[in-house]
Image (cartoon, rainbow, N blue to C red):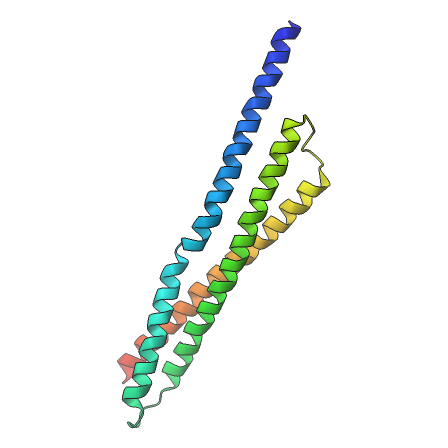
Length: 160
């Protein structure tokens, strides 16, 4: 009976280890995905908006138009790009810490040590959650700035 329990423990350990190895691989994959994700779309739209605003300034420079909507929209596009870069920075940091966290868990499991109440893991997890929250806030902010810029440009075209 002891042999069965021992094999069962080994199987559970192997299963747990495999789960963490897969989690580590997924964390590494997510790190690279974070660099390429939909943020490219936001950067593209905002860059296009900035280019459009420069062209509008050239076209309407000698005309008697109030360009305040375009100026404010351009500023929102710029803020969106800056928020997006901030999001990318913290997204990379979060995914990197996630990979480190997973590697440490794998080593603890392999050495038959408990992962429960491990202070180093708790600190890493706390930092991961903080960075994830910053990423969520800056992504949301970036999208809001972009939508604000689009709205002001559309308003300018309908008003003038």
